[in-house]
Image (tube, rainbow, N blue to C red):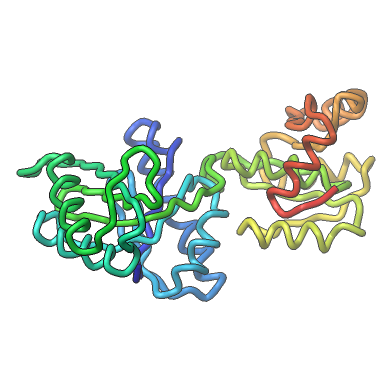
Amino acid sequence: MKSNLIIVRYGEIGLKAEYTRKQFENILIKNIKSSLKSEKISFNIKQTRGRIYVHTDQIKTACNILKKIFGIISVSPVAHTISDIDYMEKLAIEIADEQFSENMSFALKVTRVGIHKFTSRDVAIRLGDSIVKKTGASVDLTNPDIILNIDIREKDAYFYFDKIYGVGGLPLSSQGNVLAVINDEKSIFAAWYLMKRGCNTVFALSNNSIRGLLEDFIKNWYAKKIIYVVKNNDYKKFKEIISYNQCDAIVVGYFVDDLTLIKKLKEKTHLPILAPLLSMKIDKVKQDCKKIGSTI
């Protein structure tokens, strides 16, 4: 299916109150623009309630970027037409002629937002019947070989096959600033958890041997590169960094065995200490690190 349009979906943002939702949407769009520009992707963006649309000829590359932007739960390359049933039927036949064959089974999944002269069932029946006549493919609503999704929203209709799942969470910069104490790979993973919750992260690196890994991580997740080199026990420098960057908390990659270190850091800095890995097992951390492109 030829496409130069991507639907971008977000989840948690849509649950916010109207004013907050608009703020978060604007931040997410800003992050999308910044990330795509950093990879030299040509694009245009359109927004409607609950959806963001990215127009680009570099679909595959753009999808790989978008799925790593915090706040996005999924993306789909789509074909677009107007929400007139004749136009939708024409596009469905074109897509099916390219993708379906007579020995395949298929199902249509139709969703609809807005007021129309037809129901979702009406669309599924008419388009499904036309596809069967054109391709010889059979309808199977239980276990189809392929599912064609049709998302009808007001005056537009979008056709797609796949959902590419994103990282979810909240957009970077939608929350406050945190200082991440980086002394090993697992502390990078701890920082990732706070980034996923929308926090701008300032990195205090105490182990220069993993600087390259940290820089790759920052680039891979389209975060701001703010790195300070600090010795583990240089609490004066920690306080200077915290004050300058207006950090609200400190994130560490400590486990339950490191409670003494957490207590000491809190006493010296007078800030909340966030330890997202505290109750996790090392095997679980190793497994999850691989998912974000890091290793321990």
